[in-house]
Image (cartoon, rainbow, N blue to C red; front, top):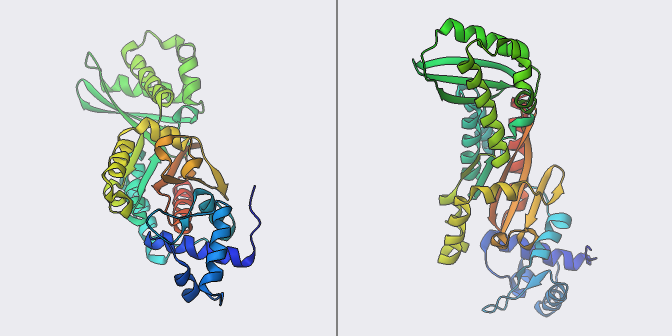
Length: 346
């Protein structure tokens, strides 16, 4: 239940959260008295702060007379008090130019997602996460096969709307490339318009009249589809960047916190699980703050994430950082980047 605060209480809470986000230091009454337009004495402000603490919106660290936000205080701030920060032109140009350049020059969309996680970490100075879309629900558009060596082939599978998945597969015996082109054309004619999961479930039936014609090549394609579906079942591939960025934050001067974030980045299945369970949303961006995370290892962190779409299939993009996160900026950053990726791949 959202607390009902007076305008005075809202102003004090807003100032404390804003100040703590920027400086990481508990905020005292004298600072509020000097730097807000409330025209209240320090004693009066202390009373307001005490009331906010009674509502569990603020807390007093043991070594300080000042206050800092609780998880509930951050949540009230995000839901009721925060003014979303607009990205500046240089940030927008940096994101747009990098993503457009990646899309025009890469062969595999994984590189686009990897590059996106890196640029997000650079701008946010936090841990940036981009998961690969769940491809099993993607609609197969076409298959292309390229010969790398006589016994090694590159399969390029294009999902509707442009998502590309590449796989390198080895064969036991050399196959004439004209036969490869013939089978590739057959597969494109028979399977285009089906989801990858439908192809896996009905493959033998759909190519039954050709199953004795280059069976190794047909099996190769089936194995590639099976591999993609299996990856979905086991968990998406995830790109994580920004370990060096986030550990520069004051919170990670404590070796325990440093160890926790390293452990988190190494457990990619945990990261995927975290991003599959969104929190409370603002527009299309979801936010989880501290104790709102189900995972105990994340009680000192906040997550800001959104969906993006490539080829009709969705993935997740987001930021993990200390609770002292610039939510106003991170929400705009995640929202803009996710929409840009989706729009470029329509």
